[in-house]
Image (tube, rainbow, N blue to C red; front, side, top):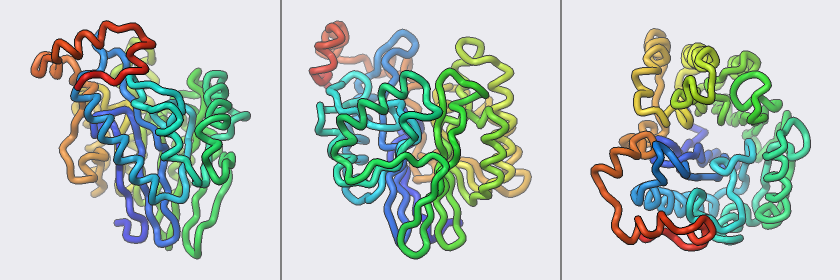
Length: 328
């Protein structure tokens, strides 16, 4: 389907972490999309299992190795599963102070969500901090909202207008989508659009006409808790429309945090199959088995009880855990 554009998923929910980090290569440029990865600090009343920590540690190395090859790094928005902070944190982000972010952003062109416009308060603060810390390692920082950038003879990176992080007027703010075009091929990266829940976001996807899309689906695991059921149904309906429009949909992120996600997304697969399109996770695209570690955290603890040393570490104070790696 894509021959000039090579996609390599590096970290994702289907790999066992919170992320959508992907390396995209064309004959002209190598782009590292949303180089962040994190773990949920508390799910089902439990902290991340040692297997989750081993996974994020390995994927951090994978992302760092990909960053060595990339010329461009993108930031769709400033949540820590989409960009890497510079402070030390071994609980959630698996970051060494200054060094982890430096490995990723050093001498890169960073095309990022505008840090001042269409951005909520928490992300504005994180954007400011990024520019003062990890972003200082970059060759260039540029707000990308609504802009297009040409690389070499044939590659064009186009960024959408800011779109809602979920439903219209979301309290979580905005994100930007990326369209990568090369010699008639088009790949779209749509992080945290949650379906999309927004009709405007769906219109932008349809207008772009990508042959392949990686998209963040609706957060089914938050149903009737933090997200209204009607909004989730809108996200699923719009996601089915995406699957009907785009030949290959790589479904990732929030949706895969629900252990029953496959059953709850049957309509998506049916809509795609009806017209010969495909839906798969990033792991499946990469030829791997899905490793939905967060969704199955309770089972991890039951089947693989942590060591006494790990349990002692779990009961340390926040500062102590941030500055000391868990015993794995």
